[in-house]
Image 1 (spheres, helix red, strand yellow):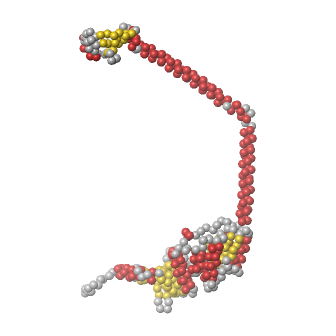
Image 2: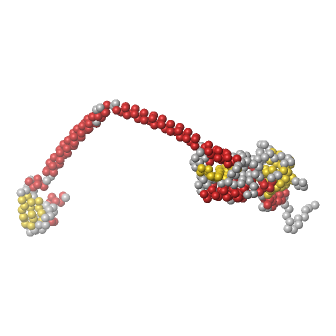
Image 3: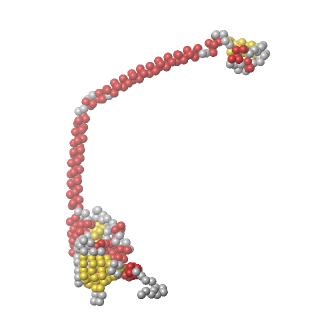
Length: 414
């Protein structure tokens, strides 16, 4: 029996339908960042993979949940069946079984659920504003001579800070800007004190914090007013809120987090006694180095003073003087050889030049004929009958007139 497909409808495969449902869920903005409150049931933790699988349920419904290893590592309590929690994550479809799942990214115990939820939302918003960016963190100055403190004026935290600073750096000036550290008025007072110290501008660093307490006691340091006051401070801020296990948004905004107020004081001011001891040790070490260096130089000077050069300084130059004399004699001998050779060559050239001199030719009875213009006659074409010639002989000149011109038979050979 065949199937009937209605017009305009389409038969989907299971995969296509599941993918389509997943796309609907993943495109719903609410379901991609949602907080859910419920009770954990059927909790399973796989040690090898580090993943957590469980259900969140209430009186009438249940949803399958998974928290992968990278997110599960941030859980700072031990989940288990029957524990009520609030969780943040997103909804998607596990295609293999065709069911939707809640993929958990954060999880906190319920009971303080509203506080945790508001804290997480504020943390997310301030983080997007860049208030927790590590690139804006500033180093604490190495030497602090004026310390600002924002805390309760009658709290143990202030006494601990003063005690440690006096032990480490008795010359450090401590300026306390008192503020309530818990209660509804605390955020405003803490922010005002931070702003006042910045307006004054004298402290090299500011400590802000208080001693330990419950989450509600420390809540002022999780407020937007305090976080933004710390972030806008031009002076570096050390946050010291509660004990080591306590953590607040003020810690994220501060330039440095201290586990306790005592540690904050240790971070803020240098241990001048330790520096003094180090300076003394360095001075002694430098003195020993200088003494050793001076002794070595004196020993070298004594050695040099005993050398023969100081008693007979001319001995230093004697080898060079002899070498210079020998070199000078060699140069003189070489120059004489060159001059003699050039003189002999010049005499030979003079003899050769004299042999080919025109005067020698004239002495043998020859004459040089020149036209009236002074040109030497080399061919009969240069003269004409009745023209005058000047004949140069050995001892004078003869003026002659051309009577006849004859071509010699011997000229044909050339």
